[in-house]
Each structure stands twice: as C-alpha cells, then as structure tokens.
Length: 212
Image (cartoon, rainbow, N blue to C red):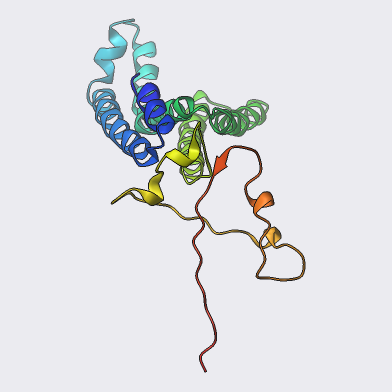
C-alpha cells in the first residue's frame, strides 16, 4: 500500500531512479508474500478448502483449482506493484491498457471455449494463469517505457533527473526514423519526438563515419 505514495514523492522530486528502486523493493516483498501463499496452496490445499466445506467433491475441485491458479500468484503481485507505481507517478492509462488487454485475451477465448463440447472449468483456470503472466509482462514493459522519459513536473530545470544523478541507471531509447525532419537524415523533429508542454528529455548522440 505504501508503493504508490513513495513512488509519487520521488517522481515528483525528479528522483526517477528511486522510483525504480521502489518498484524493485516492492516486487521483492510481494514475491516473498505471494511465494509463501503459492507454497501453502501446493502443500496443504485440502486443509484450506476443508475450512469452508467438507464435501469430498468440493474439496477435490478446490484442491485442483488452488494448485493450478496459485502458480500465477507471484505474477499477480508484480501486476499490483506496477499498477501502484503507475498510480503514484500519475500515469494510469498504461495500467488500464494492460488490464484491458488481459481481459480481452481472457474473455473472448472463454466465450469460444464455452460453446464447444467437452468444455471444462479447468480450461478457464489454465487460460487465467496464462493471461495473468501476459498482463504482468505487459505491465513491466509499459512501466520501463514510462520511466525512460520524457519527464514532467513543476520547475523542471531545477531538478536533476537520472542522467544527471551519480550512479543512476539510465535506459536510453532510440528515435524512430519517422522523426526525421524532411529529406536530411541528420535533422530530427524534436517537437514530434517529445509532444506536449512542460517536458524534459535528455538526448545522447553517437557520431559515426567511415574509415579513411
């Protein structure tokens, strides 16, 4: 629960590297907690289900469900942490996009499977686990892109972002060819590369020329 405010405070202060550290620390804590939950579901699922029902059929179904779905617990923790980071830095659309992607990838195949003969509940469970891993992967990928800049804030020129911070890890992204301005390949349209107002970005150049 503290991930969002900690990330928000550091992002607002321009300490993007600390936001990354917050994400990594939260993922470690989440992985331990969800890993223990996974272990419990693998070792004593019958006792967990038996707390709610003593019906052998219910227990058997619950045991199968817990042992299968619990493999996605760690990935679910990553999703929660990434969503908290997005909330903290004030960019919630990527989290919405990854959630919507998972919903589409889950709902439509389930609808299709339900129309076929031999449909079983375990097919839904397998699909749920698979789409949760896709959701987690998409969330981490979108978060990496979000923290790579450009950055927004208040008095931007008074803040030192990751490229200016000592020992800070920086992820550089290349500019695509469609950002070229006109026919000259050496001219880049910065306004197209960094749309919007009140934004900061760092540019790194590499000069190459053929050997004499």
